[in-house]
Image (cartoon, rainbow, N blue to C red; front, side):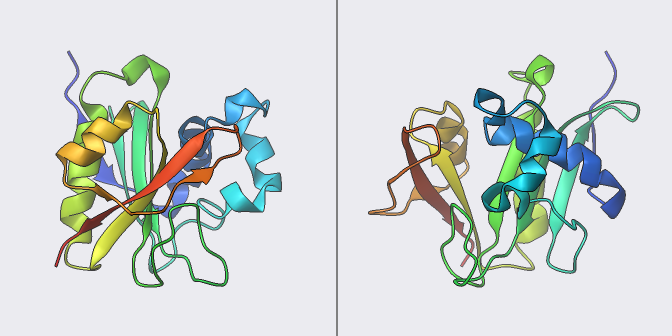
Length: 167
């Protein structure tokens, strides 16, 4: 078995992050490709122009084949993301390619991103569908649900905001 590789995300990873955003946002339910995400500001903000000073991410898989990514970006109250908490807390996006799900890659990516984030930020937030099995991972790693954060998402189901506070 090829060993798992985790590395920092760079500007050159933007095309792969678009593919991972397509997975993370369940966009296949109503879009035909990751390129279609570019036309949706509420989703494209998570990747468009990746590599700024506040962007932080981890790519995982093998050297030849990335299979997942976890990344954070800060948003403002004037342009909040789905899991917005405040202007100092970046929001998480994470996805693992379907063939690599259940392998521990998601846990490895998120654990590494949390470690890398702690010196820079007071917390990390995220938005997750209430029925998404990944909620168990987030809870296990210390994320808690933000009271009153339930919203109806694009699919017509419920999403909640969760936050992991470092201080």
